[in-house]
Image (cartoon, rainbow, N blue to C red; front, side):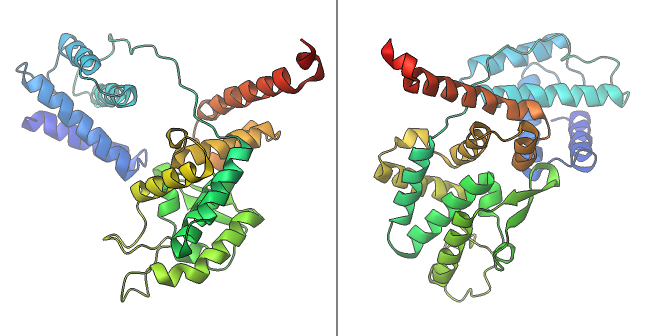
Length: 305
């Protein structure tokens, strides 16, 4: 970036951090997005600070032909739009060059969801794995399914959070916002079983390791990537297609099964830590589809047809 574009970007990211309490991962992603846009504009002899609407339109079009995932391309467009709205609000520009470019319309994909029976098999397969690692994996699956934790929240749990067998966790989620995450009896029992073998998973000479899910890796705790790998292995053991299973799918199952059981949408929103209820509403479509399928296949009149 040139000096003016770089200084605007720095001010924008500082605003996102201070005023909107954006998480570190979000700030890092937006920083990369702005650098990507700046690199493209530099090829046109432009800078973020002096780009025209035609330049921004060309950049958005370029995102569509690069083979990026839809989510990545959408986030980059969103980052640029927010950046220019910020610059306009600060009076640095008299116009918003991203305003005239419409975002591509795309349907929102429904999350993958496992049935209750599949979740039971997955938990059993995780618990059946050998030794301390099996108990650790079973504990992580139970916790994720019982509380709807994000993978980043799950792997970052400190030992102190569960040392005294709490009925719920206080979780710091996106934007530093705290919420309550419930723990059912099965999850608490899994935690107790895992804590008994946790010392066997500690790095040598690291008895003071602060993480709940300790590991002998460099970070001292289990990484999201390693958890995903072990989850795939457990899925295969359970006879569930690993392509349908991921750490985030456990969170989807938590939300969908709650709604199927009659939970209020606002309650599920709070439990998931969603700022906007529209994000939570997608689970109502999943639950409705599953309920319609049950009626179509299990109702006595349906069977007579």
